[in-house]
Image (tube, rainbow, N blue to C red; front, side, top):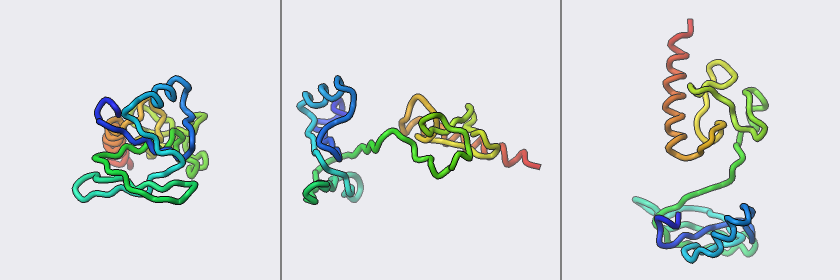
Length: 145
C-alpha cells in the first residue's frame, strides 16, 4: 500500500506483528507506515467515499477517528467454512476444493471468493470466480431433468 499512498496506518489488534521476520523488519522501517497497536477498526466514516476510520484501543477502550481516503481490511487467512461441517471437500486449512467451473465435491454446489482453494486471494479473482460460478450454476440448473 505504501507504493500508492503518502501514509498508511496499520491497525493491529496486538502489540506486535506475527508475520515473517523479514516482513516485520521492512514494515517497521518504512517511514510511510504508522502503527496503531492493540486496536481494532470499529467503523468507516464517509458519505461518498472513505473519509475516516474509527479505531478502538482494545486495552484502554479509547476510541478515535483517523482521517483517511481509503481502507483496506485484512482479517486473516483462515477461511470461515466450519459451518459446512465437512459437507464439501476442503483442504487441510479449510479452503473449499473446486474444479475450473467452481463446482465443489457436491453436485450443484459452487464456490467463489476467498474460501476457495486458490493461489491468489484478491477482489479481482473473487469476482472472476463468482462469474464462473454463476454461469456454471445456471448451466447446472438448465440441465436438470
